[in-house]
Length: 89
Image 1: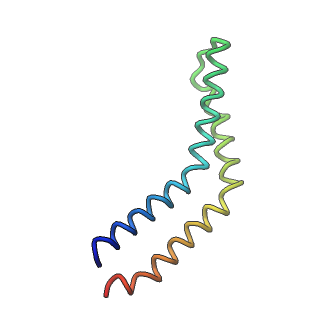
Image 2 (image 1 turned 60 degrees about the horizontal axis):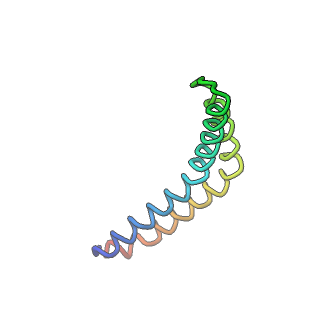
């Protein structure tokens, strides 16, 4: 296994992790920013106000993107296992 192969696998792994986490993180970020903006405009300083909408938003994001996320992860794992014999030689 060469250094180039290791770096390529690490890069692909990080890209897949970024793709898989993006829908959840972006949803949480948008909802959190919206609620923070609402709290600053109305001067409501309740910490638990942001929890339920974020929980619902992340659940909806998982329902909408979960199939794609699972397919992406399975495809990456399958490709990695197919490349494994060539990497060990």
